[in-house]
Length: 187
Length: 145
Image 1 (cartoon, rainbow over the protein chains, first blue to last red):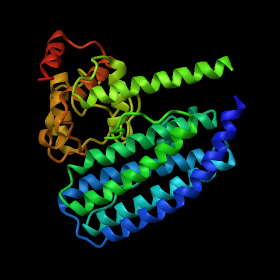
Image 2 (cartoon, rainbow over the protein chains, first blue to last red):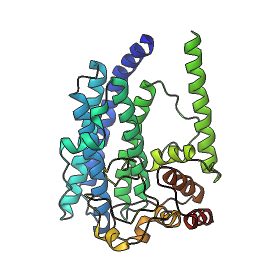
Image 3 (cartoon, helix red, strand yellow):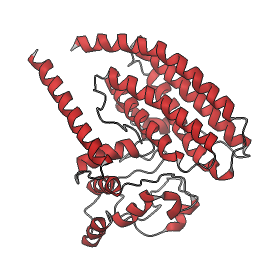
């Protein structure tokens, strides 16, 4: 039972290095989009996406402070949280540019209750929850693309979805779950 | 060693099942069972919804047969509050086909084009709800067409 744990730590450490580059690319995508005008119809879609990012940030932040994560996994959680913060900043800026008020995060107590974070007892529990959230997030962004009126915004959503897919893939592999053989994993 | 092999077999068995499910979903022939629906539910709805807690969207326990916009404390959009009525399988099918078509201005943005995928998700939602009335069940059967 110890062997997969060692492999997972090594894998997570390596994956953490690889993920840093992707986060930078994501940040640039957000910056490029922030200069365009947001159509009123798209603001609601962005707000829903922003809620997703708030939840992801809270999950990683609270789990990171739980003491359940090994150093390698914690390092990766911080990287992933950084991606979500970059997504949040891009999306919030777009809402503000459109004259809207970006949706605020909930309280930690709410996130703990809603995600049942108090029930997490091990690193494997944290990884399983994060895997589920990242898969849902990757799919949610794809699902929302057809609702967007602005192709540039659709491109941003696709870029964010790809980031979430990287998170899912990393976590899924760390848990030792095979990648699905069939195409169209998300959406 | 035997344990490792068993784990590997279970994992590959799971992979095979997931692959078959994904292929079936794309071909419009999703199995009509709650387990298949749960997989699709987690992938399609799990970003915002959970069965037992309100998150970005409201909880789904007992959604079939529940009045629209009726979870106490959840911040529904005015559009959904105005929709009214009960969530039947047929109405859920309409909702999942295009949330903004059914309730423009609601907070959910989703269009599931594949009726087999919608049907499978609704079967799962029925499985986490109180037993539906016979009329609702017939509506579910019709909704795949």
